[in-house]
Each structure stands twice: as structure tokens, then as C-alpha cells.
Length: 144
Length: 333
Image 1 (cartoon, rainbow over the protein chains, first blue to last red):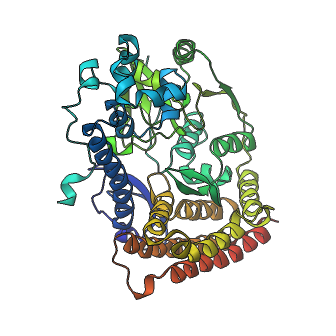
Image 2 (image 1 turned 60 degrees about the vertical axis):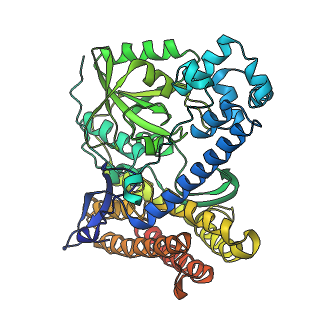
């Protein structure tokens, strides 16, 4: 790749530049900052599409009363029950149970606090089914 | 206490940390040179290892190995520690920092507040150098960022003890002894030798040149076997592995070409400079594959973007890389 051809296609990095290696006119390698490259941006968007779809699906299930708010925070933080269980120090089957609305509503304060602190929200925010907010999507402005 | 540590941004975290640490101890070294001596270039297609339900392809050697091999080859003593207790891990970090020693850390990316949210994946193989403490914050030379960054103690402690695959367990490392002189030429040859061996001689069909051909064969079958929708997800994952932050472009091929150029100068061998140009051209072929693959992901595939055509590009890369590694083997003999 030639230095003058290093792509500067704005992507999910939103202004942060990474280093790529490219050659100058004499064929000498240099480190060149790059804002992004469209083929890579497309691949990244594809990955974020999957996350967004999962979040949308879970939101619907929470509204329908088949999943608890924990499911939302779990997919939003790109975790599965196994990883979540490791972080909060519970058995995986317990975390799975908490994904169900019935078990979730019976959760005691210490457990709620554990979850909330892991996700960086307050217990009220964590439990609230109504305030499932607008989701973060990197490079969103660029997509419009 | 803030250590006088020279931060340089690099493409990849591990080779960047290695190069910056070595430079701190008087062995001025570029990222590319550290990457090459550490035998960083690699290829493996691991269809049975799934990340987000998609197969893993790697263009670099195992995590941690680049640092270890570079330090070992240059006979530099490094002390590595892992911890059970996060508190003890932080205390030990402080203790070593207070002695004026820059400390390398392996961390997860998820809890680092200075990471743009787009990069906060559950990825546990990030590397950085802590260069001091200031007002309860840590001053960090994170090689993928243009300037040194700050991180609070709690976040750094969390990042050092992330869970999941390849947990860092608070891993920290620092240089304890540096020899008076370095055999750089010999180290470069050893580095090239290990890459050549890994790419040509690994007795596994999923690794090296054979791995590339294996990927090509599998790729041709993706649409029939997985359906179009899933097949393009596989392509997208491959493009991310090849081009996402840290590879320097074309799945580390360009960094390695930069290394070969430095090697040519160090060993006074113009053939290596020619090899560098060859690898640059191969990298451009990998990028051509990414362009084709991305058009498929976007649903805008042209006539020349069939899975068979993309597999053909990978086979072409395999053939050209095979010839290159054989030539390199001859040069360092």
C-alpha cells in the first residue's frame, strides 16, 4: 500500500486514528495514521448490526413479559450467562434463572447491587423496564 | 512518580509495548523490528474456535509470544507475575513503579475508560506500559493511542482482572536485567527462521500456508453449507480479523514487510529488501480480498466477487507467501 493511498474513511472509531504501515514514493515504510477503511467499516457495521438486532429482540421479549431487564443489560454489554456468572460470582444456572421475570422480581438487594455495579447503573435504572434507553451505536452519525 | 518513558503509537499493542520497553532500556527499536524478531507473522484458520458464533482466523502468533520471544532472543531478563488478589496486584504495581521501573500489563479492553466505546469488546489480550502515578490516576503508555492516557485505579484494577477467555489474572511484567551488548543481526535471523518454520513446517493442516489453502477450500463451500446470510457473516468476521485495529493493514503483512526492510539494512542484504516489496504486493492482494468480501457483506457483490473468486485470491496469497518464505529460508541459512 502506498502512503498516498492510505484510506481515511471515517468509521466506528469516530475520529480516533490508528497506525497502518505504508510505503512512500521511494518504497520506504512509514507509520501512517488512518481514520478507517470502508471495507473494514462495513465489516464493523455488520457486527454492530448483530448486536443491535439482539438488543431489539430482547427489548420486545421484556415488554412481552418473557424476559427480565437483566437480559437487556446482558446483551447490551455483550455478555452471555457464563461470562456474567463469572463477574457476579454466581452459578450460571442462577444467572439464567434471573433472566426470567418471576425470579428477577424476587431478587434481593445485594444481588441487584452486584448486577447494577457491574453494568455501571443504579439499582433503580437496572430494574426499570420502562427506561430501556436509546442504544449506543458507534459511528451512527456517519450512517445517516 | 512519573517515569521518563518515551511513548510511541504503534499499530499493535504487544509489539508496540515490546519495542517501547526495549527502547527505554537503550535498545532503540521499532515496532516492526520487535514484531519480526518475535516471529509475529502467522496464519491459522480455526473453524472450531468460535467468537460470537463465527470462526476464528488469526494472522499473528499466539498472544504473549511476541514479547517473550523477542526478550528471550535478545537475552533480556523479564520478571512476570500473576495474582489472585486484585488488591495485591495493584500494590505490587505501585511498589515496582515507585522504584522507577515501567511496568507492562496484560488487561481486558472492556473496563478501560479511555477506550472509545466502539472498541470496548470483551477482549483480554490488550497490552500497555504503566509509566507512573499522578493524583491517584495511572499514567499509561497504551501503544494504540497517539498520546499517553490516564486511568483511575478502580478501572485499571477491573481491567487487570477481567473474566472470560484468556483471563489476564493481573499479569504484569518488567525488565530486570539488560545485557551490555545485543546481537541484533543474529536475533533478526532467528526471528525470520521461526516465522518461516511456522508458516511452512507446522504439521497441522489449519496452520500456515496449508491453513490458507484450507480456508480457501472451506470458503468456496460457505454459501451452500451455511446459506448466503451466514456466509457473509463469516466473510465479515474474516475482514475484521485481517484489518481491525492492531494489524497495521493486510493482517500484519505490511508490518512484516517493514521489518524485512529494516532487516535488509541491518544485515546488509539487498535480497531482503526485494522480499519486503514482494510481501507488500501480497498484502495488497489480501486487501483486494477484503474489498470483494465487503461488497458481499453489503449485498453489492459484482461479477468478480464470487466466493470462488475470493478463494482464488487466498490461494494466490498462499502460493506467493510460500515462495517468499522459501526464499527467506535460503537467505538466512
